[in-house]
Length: 288
Image (cartoon, rainbow, N blue to C red):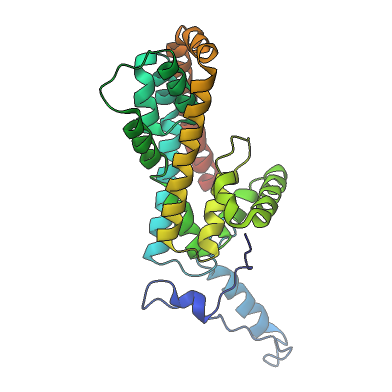
């Protein structure tokens, strides 16, 4: 999936909210002459003023390289919501996976592919007795799984690779991981939408979706492809679970004994992560 380096030009400015302009350049006198008693005074003063007048949004930690408009602020806020929801739903996933009667709910509410495989195994063993057809469960799971994916696409449309650079800038290890994933996504092209759902410990899905927006894929095509691919994956996982059958239900029975403890532990983890993040931000603000 090809991409071009981000640049600030008239076309980029036109894509943002009407009426918003880039901040005027700060004039800096680079001449060596000044007053008779201060040969380089104006240049030094102008450079100091430029540093002092640096806008809040002109920060490498931000995904944009222009004065943000309402669309930029809204998209960044949605990215925060997406992260918070993903973290908060972890205990719910663990709890729903702990009983055969809750597996259809797990699939319908979260679109869990692990849940889909377990769902197929339950149907194979005759343990699915709900009145709702299994197809509707998978369709609901597809919708819920894709509900926030458009935010990544929007980030790519607004900022190009900006969001990827923010993620990659967290550490040297993160930079290497995102460079590797981005190379894979570029080579895969449109097939990257299928690869995005491969269960590997790399941020492949987020990168593929951001690059889809950066490469100007239309939102309709993105949503249609994403939902289609997600449904195919859920059907495939359900089919695998149906073929395997009893071994999966046996694992489920063992897990059900500790599911509540796992859910409680994940609740603690969520609170610790949230508290640590808040403390870190407050500490950085105090130092600034």
